[in-house]
Image (cartoon, rainbow, N blue to C red; front, side, top):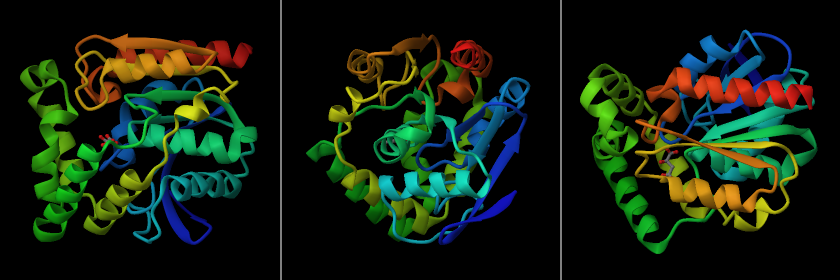
Length: 264
Ligand code: MLT
């Protein structure tokens, strides 16, 4: 589906009914990474998975920043006539969820932060991202996919589920190169969300794969320590894409969390 949201046309999937749950993809992903959640959770809630600007079927339009991605989501909710929602995000989607909280907290029922972290980039990470921008400009998204695919999934998934690795590789390689470069810039310039954590006063579920090397369990524990009403789930045998690698376990913990949030 597509809808006009502010200055851009956004592509999104929308399934189920009841409490709206927005699922924000990471970098350089698109909404297809949530397909198992659209199937598994839409019996329980209204799952809305958009493509962030520059990815999937959404317009590839500057400017790019975490704040801008968050405001795009607020405009998408306006366009869909939704006032309040659970906001979930994986990795970069988690950074966007934290920006959404900073800018639109009154619209947030609860947060689901998966395989993500609060701090801004270190100098070393910024240098790596600048190298990746050069790779993207020179060789395109397939070269970015080559550089990123190993870190995206856990060791167990890489050994036992080559079909999932191939599926994720295709998603990374298909990302529009201008969207990839814009997102890398947004990642580099994102603020430190650590001071934000103490302001979060809605139920928050933190999920991480125990084999996540990009945003390891230590990052998830720091989020848990910083957010008063939070719970932490560590999924065994999953890497950075916990929702893709262990979809049934991921859906189970999110489903239980949403049930409690609905009972409120
Ligand atoms: C992601 O999956 O969104 C990225 O790994 C986030 C990051 O590089 O910080």
